[in-house]
Amino acid sequence: MKILGIETSCDETAASVVEDGRKILSNIVASSWEMHAKTGGVIPETAARAQVLSIIPTISEALNEAELDLTKIDALAITVGPGLIGSLLVGVETAKTLALLYKKPIIPVNHLVAHIYANWLTDKPEPDFPALALVVSGGHTDLVLLKAHGSTSWIGGTRDDAAGEAFDKTARLLGLPYPGGPAISNESAKYLNGGVKTLNFFPRPLAHEKNFEWSFSGLKTAVSRTVGENSSGFDVPRLAAEIQEAIVEVLVEKTLRAVGKFKPKSLLLAGGVAANLRLREKFEFELSKSIFKTDFRVPPPRLCTDNAAYIAACAFYNPARLPWQKIESRPELTIVGLP
Ligand code: KG4
Ligand code: ZN
Image (cartoon, rainbow, N blue to C red; front, side, top):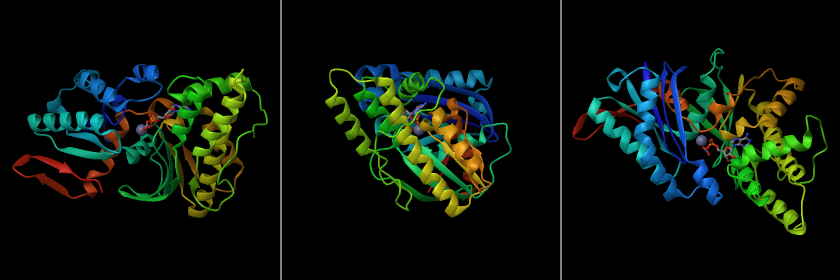
């Protein structure tokens, strides 16, 4: 089954064709982040206008690369949220129009659940259930337990800022470009220079509380204060390394606590922040020392950040379990609903 995935929830316009939920036939991402770098973050109106310009060329390129036309596609999958409403509408309306024209079903997809399915787009065998997923993106930090496809329960998450937001906002305070995650990671690498250093300058809120919650807004305040107190000059690589470690350490600690409680067969990392090398490395290291025999999975970095391949993969694994609904007076257009 070949699904055309479309993703327009924020500043990326993405289209991808995936076969049977696992094989990527094409994966095209047009990003407007260079434009947002000029304003230090995403302006929703600007992002939506960029989506309008990119959506048709991106879909065409994805079909060309897969050497298919829309008649050969079995279904369309589209992100319906969460995300910026203007950006989402561009993708949803385009998908609906194409579905009507070509008489194809549309599968609406939740962007956060879909991020997890990047772990199905690898050469490894499918992850075993129950699986615990840590979804760390620009807007969300959530721990989700998957008992099976279509059976997800929320275990915990952030009380305030998301991990990616913490990277983006603290990077801005250091004068680093948007998106902040890769910028902080690069600066940290300069400071660490391949070695190991003690990094404990910033607080680790909620780290010792026996829950599955995080709080990152205090980090922003702590960085802002440090920068303000050292306005004549501060060591950007060192502060970047301290910020990265403060975020990574609490993410790993709380997630491993959840592994201890739920004893999942697989631990799946997902979302843009999962591209962070230090986070991947620390998970691998801590799990190798632990008594848990959890199979740790993390997608390649290019599949962690927003793209449409995981939208198509998520749609493949989820629709059959859900009721089909028909849009009134449009019997040829069927929609599969996610809860
Ligand atoms: O999943 P994503 O592409 O978009 C959302 O759904 O939000 O995540 C974007 C976030 C941004 O906050 C960005 O700074 C962060 O992922 N990010 C990283 C890295 N690459 C992207 N954070 C830390 N290290 C990275 N290498
Ligand atoms: Zn995302």
